[in-house]
Image (cartoon, rainbow, N blue to C red; front, side, top):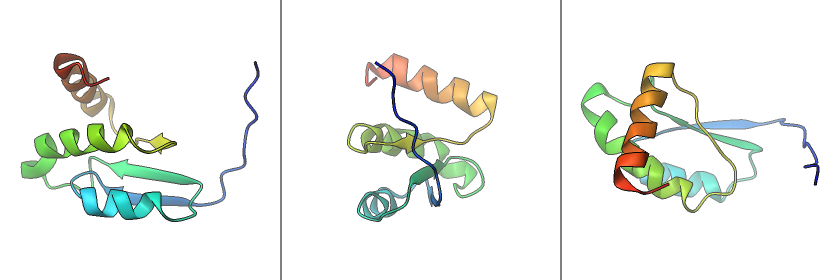
Length: 85
């Protein structure tokens, strides 16, 4: 079955390290929500932020994650290692 594509007019970026902001973002009418694992997350918070993103991905309908290939590789490794995905 073909999936209908919806125009993306608004995009809300929230820090991957903030579960509170991610929960709030889910209540807003943005077409996309980005969990920022790079610029909006301090280097010392990146490991914990990955866990927060996993929890949010389990509850949000349309997650959209921008990150570099290295960060993607690390996140996928975490997801696979924890059996969370």
